[in-house]
Length: 150
Image (tube, rainbow, N blue to C red; front, side, top):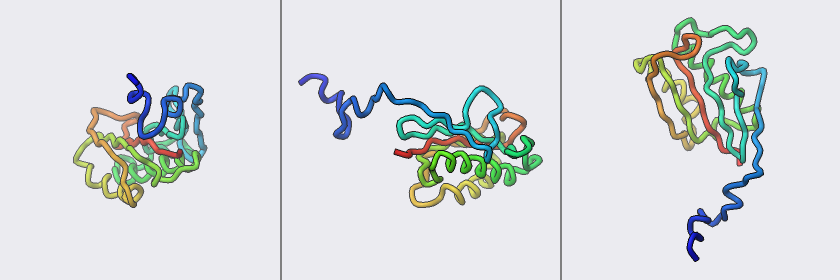
């Protein structure tokens, strides 16, 4: 039957894959900084958790952490990201994709070593790492992620 193959993927029919009634749920926690713009810390949709990028803000004060020290900044970024994951009932092991944004690729090894402490178990997430011209509030590192909770 024409079109049958397009309607199925890995034994699931289109109704299972494309649930038009799926709703999105905002995930927020006081253990991570409040967004600095019109977005959520994360959105849970259909078993997928999309976490917004985290920069090294102290969630209790809103102040930048690290004073330009990329190791301290990375530790705070990862702490913030894990707090958002935990609020959604996830752990770093559920993360399938990350993007690391660096103000300077010369910081790659330092960031990578700290990143591996959180995401280096079992199956590490797929990842992109890019240098950008600038990050919010003068941060040197920002990390976002996608996790599978389904």
